[in-house]
Image (cartoon, rainbow, N blue to C red; front, side):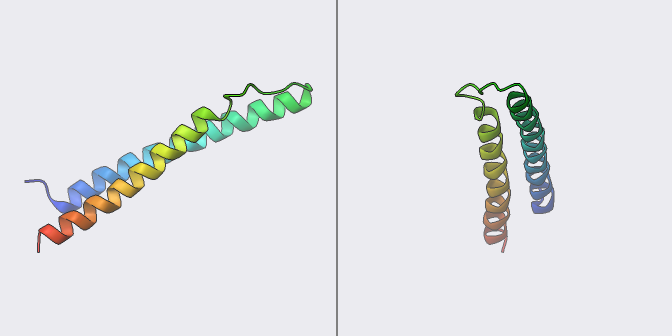
Length: 77
């Protein structure tokens, strides 16, 4: 049986990795937006999708880590 601390640590690692992806996507988007402004260009309609998806994954991973901890805490007592 997996220990609660190990399960929580694994979930938090996933959440941290997802948040790192958000930071990468945000930086890429900022660069693209700056380039578009400097060159008087517009961005395509889907420019925000990678960042939005990364944020959703990050939020979901963090929520899952918290839920796992609560559930395992309730069932182990």
